[in-house]
Image (cartoon, rainbow, N blue to C red; front, side, top):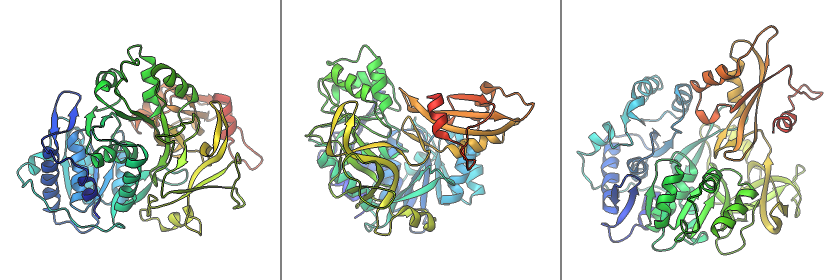
Length: 506
């Protein structure tokens, strides 16, 4: 069925009850949610778009932005969320590759987004502000608040999420109604969602974690969401006593622990804290338990699979481990020779299940390359079953992620592709070559660091280079440090040894 129909089954009977409460005191009932979604669906349907048309969205977080996502599903179209930090060159690539029929952007970006959209052949551009401004709401507000959900099959596309690889440009992971619906149902049961749960939602909604895992969970359970526009420790502490569930990246938990106002009293009504999108340091895991009495539930997922492994709600939650394969999901760890790894043997993590994506948008060869002949998706992560972590012994059926087989950096929960940043740095005057690496960071999980070699006779200014990069690429991709060196370490084949750089600058 259409994913919207599945989520709708969880909406409460009392439509006057609160669906979303914002940080600044606005209340949206379930009736408001349904009517706004229908109005926006009517706007999209009125454009008479071909089946499978994409709706690309780069707007700040707001309840209306969530309604736009739901309206896209309801109208039977394909949702394409884009990180709000992306700049013009990045947006041009996504719009050129996905060829969306509709683009929705923030009012402040309308001039340059319209130019890029026109260049890429997109006819319909609307604006949506986080203050309920913009042409989208102006036009949708005049339309009917009733709309019959468009029928879709399980295999039809619901969303495309662009994910950074380590070779070539970003790839569009095609997620179907079944991929997202099956995962939402599994997580509702596995994480013990209950009647009366209230979700404290401070994650962005252009990302799997905030849009699919968090929002789907609350919608399917008919649970109220307390909606924060971004991570703000004071706001989290303020609203936590009225919440029961929170999902965050490790940075959330690091920042909370730094605040003296965060106490056992703050979490008195909380049922569950979930962490993902980046590795959670064992030190953070232990300190949080000591401070609050709550054990953070760490899980593991990716754009191509949504969630695939999780520590259990009812069983042991182990620091340094991402837990058990979710119901209906199969996970295996494979050696380079294709044989299964035993306990405590490190190998490549592969996955199979109804949550695994359909393939990469318009990249049949890349899709074929990323799946084994027997249909398992190669995650690109390296892991092991069981073994030991700094938290102690890990059960033999629990998965530990020990690294990535490629050079992907995950900073603050966002994927950073080193080659892309290197290409910008290498184009700068006086630069001979560069290598971008991720190093451990207590707040972001990993920090982006650039190691740069100057051309003979050239003098480089790291501060001005970083400032220049801030105008070209999303802020989370900009190196925290730029280090100038005489040469990069290489092996006998001439390949830069990033492992040595990571050790040197850790």
